[in-house]
Length: 198
Image: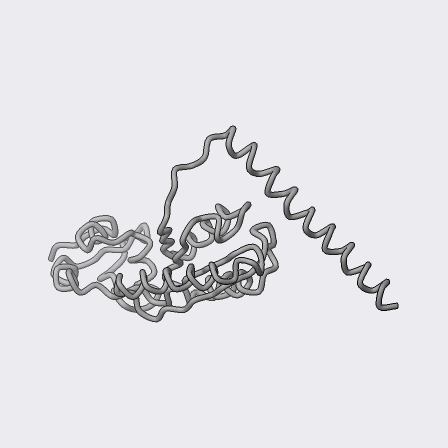
């Protein structure tokens, strides 16, 4: 009886090693035994039988759409529709759309908080975005690392080459100034309204 390592099994099935570990935890594809060192070993005939019929990733596909202001509400609908259309055409099952209206610097948006909770609870198999900065303007790499840790596949429809360091140094301060300016003037306008009402 020939036994395969987890790496050999992943190669034969065309999946990542992390996916096999997740399937094991979910009871979908169990190893035949473990070595003295604790390494999983899979029977060759079992893997061959599973080929082409590997278990689907457990969890839902979440489409996350975000725009910065109420003026862009129409763009939010377009973005969400595009994400959902892509998922349907790709054959993804159990699709959920989470939308947010708010700054890419705001970590407290309801949709973002809900997305993170669902990932941490192991309910998400795939996250689909139009672009990386739709998730967060700063700190998106941390969330992508969390996705990697929880074996969540991240699909970005419009992947663009990384901006040059000079371009980032120009764009980042502009984004920060825009957000804080809008907060400052928004605060002043509320005070003015209260003064007029009084």
